[in-house]
Image (cartoon, rainbow, N blue to C red):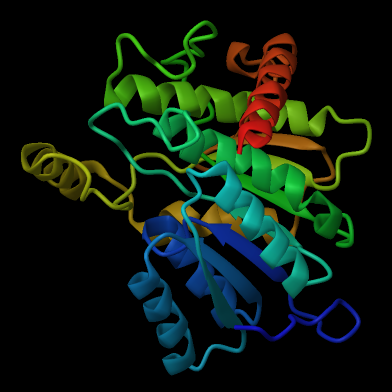
Length: 291
């Protein structure tokens, strides 16, 4: 775990960071990239699952390797620690794949006072993208792949109540964070000299993810629907390999199940992206100053 990953001159493989990499599409992406010969840093909250993916990579005889970092990415402080640890491990990052998300049936505030879905699904992605940008700048074709729900129009940013103190529901929290991730990509790409290209990717309904936080009835309903209509994990992640191996020359790309989307969608509004970026910087700053 303490060994330093190879830099570009020492090794021709890519260095990939995967948040939410111990379940579902994140796990499948990490394993597939290791088998292709890449060095993959997986971030997840479950130590047992992390050890399992490391062992599976070794037993499969993968040309690359998986390195696991245990962290609760709903914590701003923990995410900061991850950024420091990843930066100490590698001189460059070729791809940052953002999957971390977990549905919460009840409204929960983190120890830092942030609604947990917003913290995990959106804030961790904001922090990892910004914090790891110096290492991504060292890659000639660095790319951030944010796996969320671009192309969907349902849901909105609750500008006056980001923590959903009134009217909370699992769906409202998920949709708000999804729309926030749309704007995150817009804001990142609009920086004067972004460190990496940014891809907003919607994989569609997929047989993926950890359903354990949900009530038994909800889990059964989702699994039944997935059996009938959901895509396989392998099919869902296939476009991601293209984003990593042959990144677009454009600073921002939006893609829904392999289909390019216009950047003129109302959910990708530049003014709203700037507004959210300002609010986010203030929120992160306020939390950091209190810790």
